[in-house]
Figure (cartoon, rainbow, N blue to C red):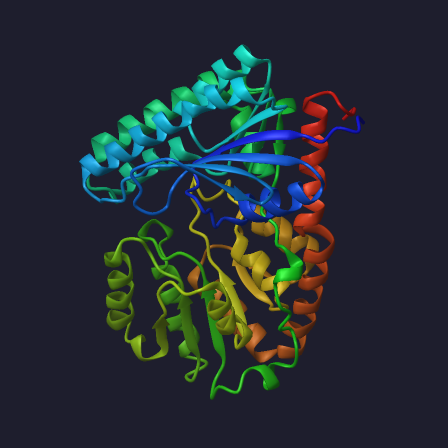
Amino acid sequence: MKNNYLKLLFISADKFPPFRVDVTVLFGKEIVNRGHVIDWLMQSDRPLDHTFETQWYGGKAIVGPTDTGTSILSRIKLHFLSIFHDVKMFRILQSKRYDIILVKDKFISGLLAIVASRMFSVKFVYWLSFPFPEDSFFRVKEKTVKYPLLYWLRGFAFYLLLYRIILPRCDHAFVQTEYMKSNIAKKGISIKKMTAVPMAVSIKDVPFYGHNQKEENPQNGPVVVYLGTLIKIRRMDFLLRSFKILLTREKNARLYLVGGSEDPSDEKLLKAEAKKLGIDHAVTLTGFLPQEEAWQYVKKASVCVSPIYPSPIFDVGSPTKLLEYMAMGKAAVANDHPEQQVVLSESKAGICVPYDERAFSEAILYLIKHQDIAHQMGIRGRKYIEERRNYSQTSAVVEKKLLNIINWIES
């Protein structure tokens, strides 16, 4: 390996300042802490009508204007502003030498990066965290969008850009999971040019709550906690029906749905469903909360849950909520989603069941009735995260691959 450190230009769909840990922790902290230098090209997450530059995690962040309106015209303007901002990559590459252009979850910018990488002899790496083309098609199929034709056209355009142009021409691609990698390979992309990087946890930032449940949970009854988004396509009514079955055996149980949705109507639907099922007295929707406040609910949990609706878009994902439960020392009940199956099979930190309301309810009940077993699962979960899903280990994998891409080390 050379003594030089990598110089990356990171172009991301995440708004500035980003909050997703695969940007802030994996790259912003871990990769930078390994001595590499990253400059960032992103749009602002707040209303902004001009470009500004600032220092962020040791590099320069070039932050572009945006439109935060919700109308169709505002959304169109947002995307055009994003494209115009990312065109700045040509000026940036002309004035400063980089080893790699890394584009995350952007499609037009991926095309621009292909051209820029050829012009300036820079490696182009693509990071795909979510199956965006398939998501557009899925939302049309599920009838969860206001403008289905626009979503279908977007999905078709993204599909062509991603699988016919960007991935075949990038030097390497990072994808979310091994399952996603195998699915993409079926579309004709060489499996050798993809690396799966599942979600992880910054273990030093996550408290351990896996102590005696009687001490941590002074509630009158068992507490079941779900931590995550409540968007309609996730079909969280499944959890409500499972919980109704649980209440026939544990009348004092409480369910906390810690999270929310960008569309307020999604939460209203869940509240209406809880009332329809006659369990609204035992169900609390907290809405979006700061991370530390959300974790306080996990601290009081007898059992944490991670139901994921089986679908082409969710099956390829890597759920962070399950890893956070484990890092905090809490036993989890999850359904047989590909990534969840792997994690729980390897860690023995919870129970994995089919996507079936009664099976899910029975697994929750078992852990409520056997808190000693749940406690041991929590300890094993924390140990697994420390050893297998800590971002310090993940960053070593990513760093090695990046160095291999520019031929500084052998694979």
